[in-house]
Image 1 (cartoon, helix red, strand yellow):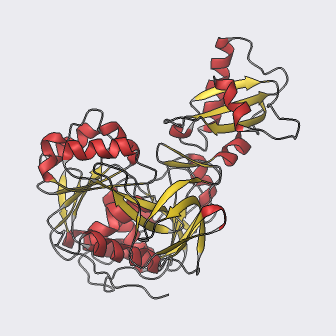
Image 2 (cartoon, rainbow, N blue to C red):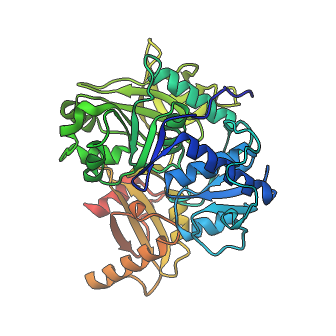
Length: 449
């Protein structure tokens, strides 16, 4: 498949890094220098693990690797077990050192060629692969391979959809999401670089973002639904609403109540993007006062399959048609409404959790015979778990239960992020299977009443 043409930035401030502005020329020089490191280690077209929490350092390494056609393995988090697993797939690593794996580090490579040397001309990457792991933070790592042509087409489509009327160059991007995931990579990094915006660091708290907005005239926010849902409860960005050009939200559903309140507070609707790592962006919507249907991006066709499952045909995918795990209703105008999921993938604080993977992991703990995760009915959809304890391990008192929960959480922390831990725990002698040998949601949920 052919890739679209995207251009590297050539001038202007690109990053605000460590409280200093970094211009395009400096960034290009750093990319060229790091590219020579990769060439010196003969890593062209090899698989390299890349993890860096710093957006500037990550971008330099990403583009240097991409220009050399390397296959870039992107761990979704900094959990040691995740990095141990993914290190087995790589020939080298670059960025932050999380584990003492027996892998050569590009950071240790030395080149004698001066930094100012012209070297090989720079270009936007178009060969090689980006390998995401959608469940690495929430279960067994599942590789999702995307080619640069797929990513580049989506960036091009995002620019045409959201920034076709005027140049976004004067704007700055402030984000709450990681660039190690596809949403952050596209909206926080690649889209800004393709349009010469200025990229600010990741902000985890609204108060920190508010401090940054003091110095920004035109801002684009790239946020998670969880961040925006908390923000509207005490919105410290209201004094800076005149500076906000657009607010993006993706990774999980944004509750309609939060979306409506956000618009009332900031006079800018949240542009919600629906999609997945596998499919890329599928559709978008903006809620101001009432429910709004999803509008497919240009070039994406939607239809319904068996049991009202959503099927798409996308220019980002090689497959003719792809069936998703979401049920939907398609309107006469071509938009659609989502009706819920058909599998056991849960969204927990914007993290995608494969509940079966967490259950399988917990079963290896010596105190656990069996277990079952579920999301409770209601608006919060809290994640809870029922654990059938091994003989002699069933807690006999509240204090014993607290100790066992702490032990199991510590065990889960080897592979899972704390945000994905169950909110409530119930310990039983055996799971409540019915006479057909099935576990019903009703019987499990009854244990939490």
